[in-house]
Length: 348
Image (cartoon, rainbow, N blue to C red; front, top):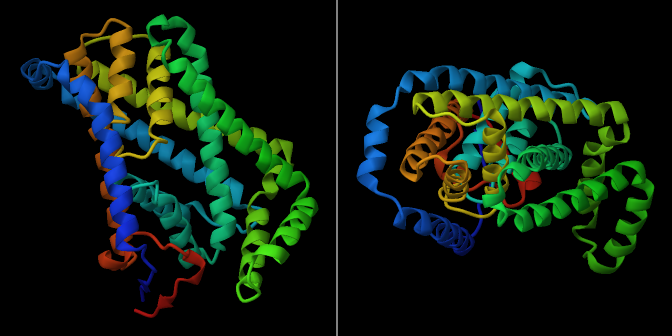
């Protein structure tokens, strides 16, 4: 019989703070673009679009979701073998959480559901999720660096991309160091924990750190790192193919590498806080890339709006279905657990 998920929620004040910050950033991104658009022309482009092209785009996108599931399965192997059949719904639930809740809370949500379904410690699975995000970011940067020299009009994005690059490489370097020198990490942690952590919570934090290091073990194997990177490239190429199909729905054409650039920039921008669904942080950079390559701004806006919806809606609905099938109570999952390892599981 299915079980109910009981979670601890964040304080209302923290939820409000995250919401208003995200909303403010979304408005800041959207306002300059909306001010220069002719909405009647955007609507005309939306009416003339051939929406049947979205169908193969969605199918290719779900190939990418399956590849993402396989990548996570591969990364979890040093911890525990979890079948693709079990992982695929969990990945979809993660998409749902990221698309509906602020601050990419879906990553914590899918780690929680995986703990419940396969008894994988949350600290370990969250370590693999963080490394996933680093590899995703590196592929996005690869896409951008390949295409940005062909777009002098987007020179203003170079500083942003450089700063993001430094951040990704710094975190990845830290993770590699932890994977190759776990004993040194333990020593440094013990030195700090002995002086800073209350004795009451020390055993629990010790266990979380140890499990987190377990989740990084695969980084010590070069063949696993290469496999993870190559799979990440395939995942994002599949998503770019969806951009390509939706482009044909709007009867314009730009080179595939331009869509790779668009994919890279919009996904790097969505690492910023925003309203749920990445409103603004996805749309404004996407429109800017297309306009830089000669696409009419109103056409670019209509295309980006539909692309955003086609990326958001199918996976969000599927993730919501899988979450509902978990018999989770909506009031308890409206915000994923602040301290997930302490969450209780009640019999249903």
